[in-house]
Length: 375
Image: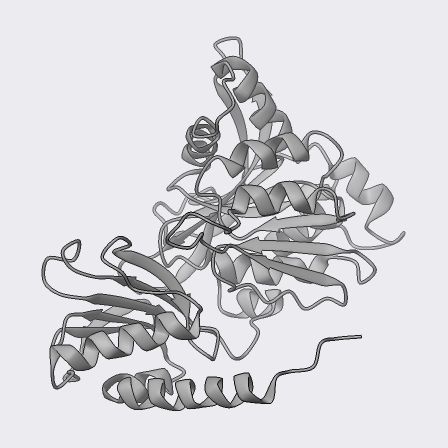
């Protein structure tokens, strides 16, 4: 039986939300504009928004510095956090789920800065990504098949390239009966399945008491009978725990990482794993990563159009004699002769090692197989 909501707490929360709405009045039009994906506040009178992948300066401004400071404090309070001199940077969220990052002086030299990553009210399906040109029907079939076969998938890309959107969309391939545990710093993912448990990090109080890191939550999730574990973004030593879990019976995991190429993504995971408190030699670590990660989906945001799209899908094939990662590019832009990121996302002629498994376990007999699955 779920705990009853305290009416006093509910009333206090509603008062806080109304106060926050008033304090954020200068940017309310952008919070209501579905075409705005990000709002960037660089002090009282320097406010930008992102639309369709491109930044534009706005005329919006806060009347006084105290008004901006009060807005930041209310956002922090809503998320159960505090802006203190000891903690110049915090992550929070708005009532609609939008992700907020706040950096205050003296760390922010030009004045208090707030970045708001908008929460998408409309779930973007994986078919929507095909319609928008982020994927092709062939790469869609490849990625959905990899997920259905419980391959471990890393989505790699820079800031604002749509990694979270892609992870959300790929989760559509999960089976309805699977128990999914999602671990994030700030809740952002929207997994549209029946049995989903969301964990969110919390920071200790000013005396160092309490708190739960992604690493601690990941370890806890392993004891909670997950069919799949989703880590919103690997940022630290939890990468080692995830890699070890992937190679010890917890397949089908998905996560995102900041990197510009599939090869860089593996080295990024390597660096993050070395940030753990486990002293592990480099070669065994690389061997574990090469064994754990099956598929890397590389996403980029095109500079000219601002459009986000998949530019490469690679399979990890282990290590070579020099202990370097071996990657097989399955699809990439320019593979059909059109150079550059604006070129077509085309098949390289390489078939994934799980092609036969896909034909046996995923595709119905008599199905017209995609080119990557044909023998």
